[in-house]
Image (tube, rainbow, N blue to C red; front, side, top):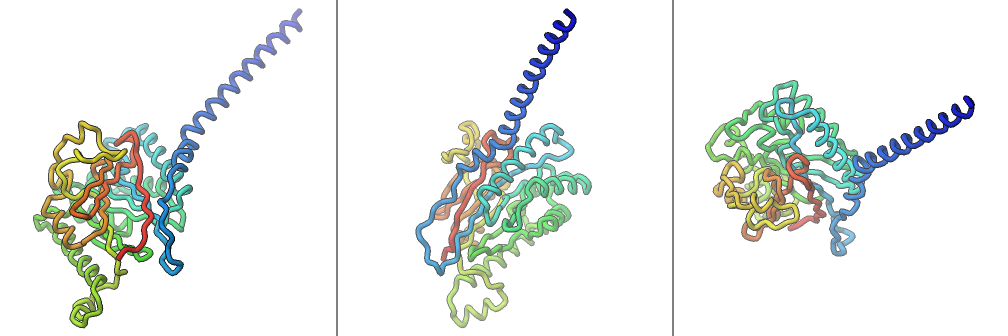
Length: 339
């Protein structure tokens, strides 16, 4: 009798253990799919645009991805679980996209950090280390960033120290031209386009004037008088530039934006404030006149929008953080040199 009862009890325990093991395996598979594989299943549906047949002598197209407003949480307002969750989501989405899409260039259009405008030396170093770990990339992909108001502060918070430490870490200078495969990208510190002649603002405007001079020289023909004026200008490909900045160009609101990732109906009713939500009308007109871009890409609003400034399109890139929206995304452009 004892042997029979012991065997029956052992059998029940084995069945229970097998059931628990099956449950654990099921939970593991679900977590693995939802927290790892799912990103690949979604992003594999993205495709680079197809281009018409190009000449064999033409420079190969450039594959570029554009992200914005990652807002890595800091130590002041960032809860540890919120940071863990959001940063894991961003890292997996980004790494999946890099592995599947293999872009040549990745641009992040400002507000990399949420508390760059407040953080001390230690907090800044910690945030930078986390960012570099999350947004690591292979040697054949280049990452270029644009400064945003949360990285160095709004105009009234912005200091030379904050700007210098950002530019030092990311090896970039606001108001510069990056040329890849014959395509010119103009990077602008839109936070400094206040127009009040502050030290940083004056330097940013001088840099934009220098960039404008370089671009104009690259567009002109070989006339002796023009060549004389352009001797000191760094040579650039004779290609219409793409303007990259954090703040959008001036527009009244997102009311006319109807993209898939555009703002909610309530948010579209909000009137934008100049120099806070968008650039001022004066700064926008000046940039358009000086740079003469063929395309503008911006961030800051956390929502997608496509508007025209005359015949020049601007695309606002939605936030890449699940904390800012439920459907974060990025933009893919397949670009050829344009004259």
